[in-house]
Amino acid sequence: MKIHLLYILLFTFTTAIFAQNTDESKVGSYVLPELLRAQNGEEINSSEKWNTIRRPEILKLFEDNVYGQVPDSFDKIEFKVLEQNNNALTGKATFKKVAIYVVRNKKIITIQAHLYIPNNVKKPAPVFLTINHRGGETMNPSPDNEFWPVEEVINSGYAMAGFDVKDVAPDHKTQYVNQILTKLYPEHISQPNGMRALGAWGWGAGRVIDYLETDTAVDAKKVIVVGHSRGGKAALWCGAQDQRVAMAVSNESGNSGAKLSRRNFGESVEVITRNFPHWFIPKYAEYANNEHNLPIDQHMLLALLAPRAVYVASAAEDSWADPKGQYLALAAAQPVFGLYDFKPNLPDNMPPDNEQVIHLPLGFHNRDGGHDMNLFDWRQFVKFADEYFKKNNNKK
Ligand code: GCU
Image (cartoon, rainbow, N blue to C red):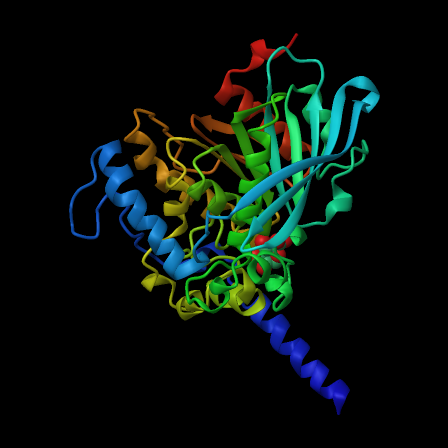
């Protein structure tokens, strides 16, 4: 009997997963919500109007329909360097493990940040900050570690920082409340648009930036927030809110990240809200099979980064994350960057596999292979960041 039930469950689960469309010819038509028209009908034709009218409106729509709010108040934040090695990577880098203590209403949480800073540079180093959902052990400097290739990044003149999302909100349907939500922001748990896991992970990145602002070896005006997949969704939402983020890198963030939700290809809102309810506010599930009624689409999330840089990476075999839907979202975000005198002019079609397109401040690639973040991806992130920061003269 039990085995029978298990089969039924497995069958329901896999059909739900595989019922997702991955046939380009079956993608229906859709109309994206307008970026440059305010809710009162006013045309948004200047960066000033974008900043004062439309940007706050869109942020609020994402808060109230998708991710929930991200609180920015707490009573105290303190940092303690737990470990330091000035001779890491055979002298190329300084390693620091930093405890970040955040206190609110006499309750405390601790985030442990890992940080590698290049020794061989003239100026404070720009820094890649990874929102890491794959566990603290993946932030090791081993040369085989393509997910977090410290040496490669250090050699290019960048610092590498990261933290484990478990420290702020475990990636679990019920236990996600166990860190900052229960301890620091309990009132959010019952609020319909209170913070949920993706917002909490971005909040964690914000606290690491608080630390980076105190470390003179890094350039906290050049923080690049990076995330892979669910981490990429969090990186974009974090960059949308926290304007200290100079650049956001979304690696294969897919649905509810960089992919257009209305494009019926790959993972849907129905599947993601059923499998990962803790990432979003409950209201988001009302758009399951009803994406056309969403008041936002994900191009608007990318637009919230303007005029800062956005890099979207995808992988050709990762149809679940819909590479084309991610490219189209980036292209659809362009008019907002245009308000800031950038003229990104991305080609209509996604570039061939492994070819990077850069139209500052936007960039994209679609790597061959499957769902992962690897050395190829990181090399493109560095190339793009080099272009954006024009930092080549920062090498000794
Ligand atoms: C699942 C989920 C995706 C997510 C991915 C990941 O596949 O459906 O939305 O991006 O996990 O985080 O690896």
